[in-house]
Length: 166
Image (cartoon, rainbow, N blue to C red; front, side, top):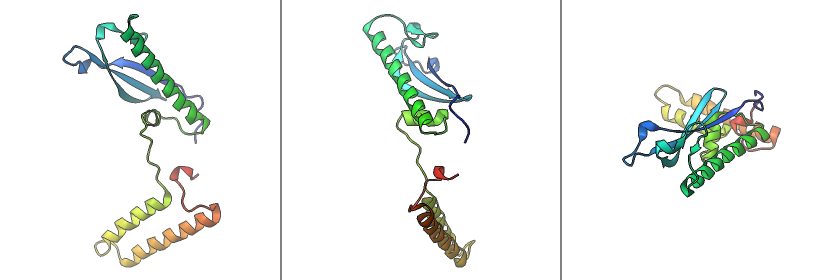
């Protein structure tokens, strides 16, 4: 695994002017960039483009709506930085997509070794008689049992996630 501690995570807020609604307001988007790869998502907020400070990535003015929105933008930025810090602390690989998914609560589905074997064996069982023999299917089931027994003896665990393998 590569050292991801020194990779900068860039956060940008911008208006998507191509999606201006009937009221003349544009949606605000957040872009996370890590190592040149981008992940974007909508903040589900809209503003009048003339009130947007492009350089400061915030709403111009000192009215209540500007203060509220700018506070929200800071909270989003802080939340993304918190996710980034947790990734670094736990030694996870930093990618723009994984940061975005974690921030939005869409964590990646973790796949385990035996769940993948079970899926494969189920697909094999459906194909028995067409391309594969019953003996082949039986061998895959036996291999699954051996792997399960190995993990139990070697690691004291019933199953492992793929990301735990080295």
